[in-house]
Image (cartoon, rainbow, N blue to C red; front, side, top):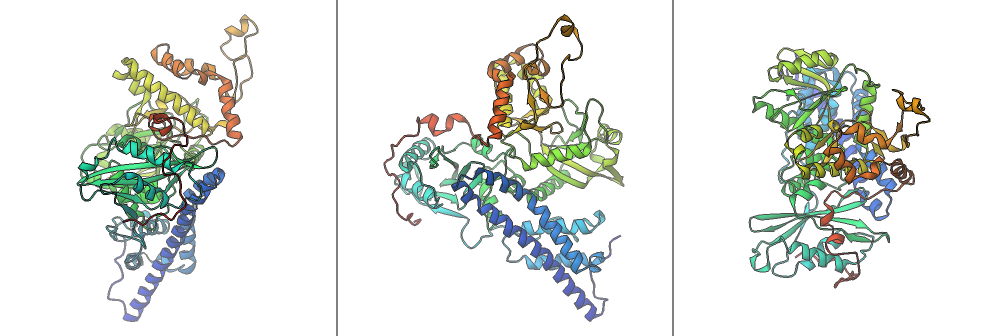
Length: 614
């Protein structure tokens, strides 16, 4: 059992010495976090320069580097603490005092919630799991982030009053001081005003508080920069997102302004790479984002802005809160059972819990290490909105009574090395957690399979997912519908990664013609087939039974059964071509609504200092 924290029976001199050691250890851990956030913020702030310079290779490199830097800083902090305090770290009774000292250091901190998570990461690598209680780690947050602000306000305010919105949006765009010139600012402003005029209140309906709020940092991802804001009129809030892209001439143009929650929600999908955002106070950004995408929990918003460890902390707290206020039990997740993962879910909670089996039955030819490596690969890769993001957890305890017997039986039979029963708890040693999606095979086996329009819609989405993954140098490997799911926005997303490979590793071939009747009758191929050989013309037969689903797929995407199309995609990837993949509907883009990008603006781009916000 754990000992109590330092108490008064110690001699005053010894107690004072112990208190000083606690403060020193707390400061050492906080120094490790401050170093991490300083580097994290510098890398995020550099996204603006990389975008202005069209340095897409550096964009991808920075994305991968930023994901891995947290664990590196934790390892450094653990090593520093062990080196400076080799004897003290084994004094379990001291850690509650270290935590209290740490709380005191966070009083004026700008990222206290992230610093608390960092403390948990360091202490959990030093302590054993029996000390994972609130007196040793931050099971609950100790410092409030409400109304926390930095050196300057998180967002700027613009007041159109009864006037034209054009001037206010001019202020919005120029406030970011983008080094690259706009191709035609006047044209873009005309189109923004025309679009918002269909949604925003007319001049006569504007309340005295009518204003625009815009986050001070652009949100960068791949080849786009996003302006994130909201309009306020009386008690109503109108979120908006403005994607900025680069044309072939290298100049900036406004691609559209997103005003509906579906398209804005797609921009903030966890199926995509995380944004790079320069945030002094991340909690303030997350609170703002909750008014822009109110259906997203804080956990997902922290993850979306690149703070995935804080996202995990928030998610775990939400899960524990849900477990304490619900009574349903974990059940086997619906859908076709996989050969690699054991998947269960809590019906009242929109996530699935995935555990790697101890052994894989033939024909699966892989191992646990390979599966874990594939999940790490997806985490580091651009998911282009087509691969589910995962949260990876270790040593998680669940109430034993919340499991259906069928789930426990499968855990004991298929993954006994991954669980321990400790009294009234089931401890899962390693697992992945993802948003629950409806598997495509389940969707098409239900009422949707009898609806021709829905079948065609989902097959268009399925083929589009394969194309966008290919553009990102991803071939799913196992293309069966059971490995793809449907999101609440109607997007098809891939979520089974054990056979995933890079597109450039594959060899796409056309089926050789049989030499004679004997070749036609053979049960095995008469020609050599290597591990990464793919024959696209066989995909429809392999993936779909004869009928409307296969027909819909072939009508929507005939090129996907042509080896030449896949080989062409490989050539593009090898040439370093980074294709535009838009997270919003094609029909809301200005080039679709208003026609090609031509010089039509009234204001142009005068070289003057952006007017002060009024």
